[in-house]
Amino acid sequence: MEAKWTMLGTGALLAASIVGCAVDTTGEPILQREQAATAEGDCKEFAVTSPNFEDGEALPYAYTCEGAPFGSGVSPELNWTKGPEGTKSYAIVFVDTTILAANQPNFAFHWAAWNIPKNKRNLPEGIVGVDPASPPPVALPKSMKSAAHSQARGVQRFFGPCPSWTVTQAELCGLPPVDRVTDSYAFIIYALPEADIAVPAHDPTINTNYVDRLNAFFAEMALGQTEIHATSDAVPTTTPPVGCPAVPAP
Image 1 (cartoon, rainbow, N blue to C red):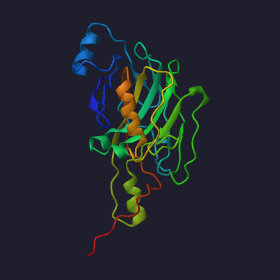
Image 2 (image 1 turned 180 degrees about the vertical axis):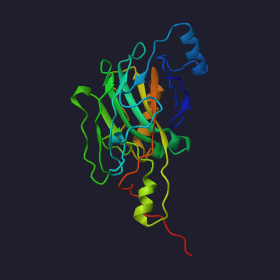
Image 3 (image 1 turned 90 degrees about the horizontal axis):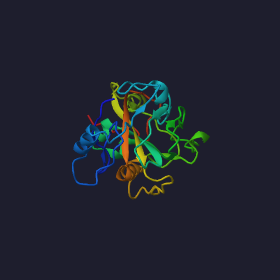
């Protein structure tokens, strides 16, 4: 998996790398420091893989909203290697990088989990996302011990990819058909220096997308981070609560 660098979130630079180096605190460009440290052998590999998809491939429909209500889908299995020295826990952020590149973080960040113990380097398959019209919390598997999670609006559940909801909107609203779109996504694994992190509470007056806020929080303290990428063109059976667009008068 090739190292990639990108700007994600509100002012947060994510070192989306396969090496477990420290986040820059010197003012020197992070990529330059990481490359130099790797050349010197100071950094150990920090990488994430999945048995359900290869890096950069389409995410199988089972992990998306395809043919199900908007907000559906279950988590794929993720496995990662040991983080850099000093890692006490891990966090995961799932983000639509296509929407983020369009400068819409309020819609880009889907889901986060945190306080994953340092000896638990696995996200189980099957954490559920459900219809937003009926949003009961979804408990994490007992194997994740003290971990917690949330989707964008502060509800405890997974939120799978659902980029082509406008296909369904057009059908339900009697509009001309629209094509599927394919978005790119990333699962980001953060190596964090504390075992029990007190995250900021969800406050929609500060940021309506809780995962965007959590992402910035994790990125600021991270000792290292790595990511795996996927794409999706999933079409749901329902849409987010946006209603039908107004039809211009003839």
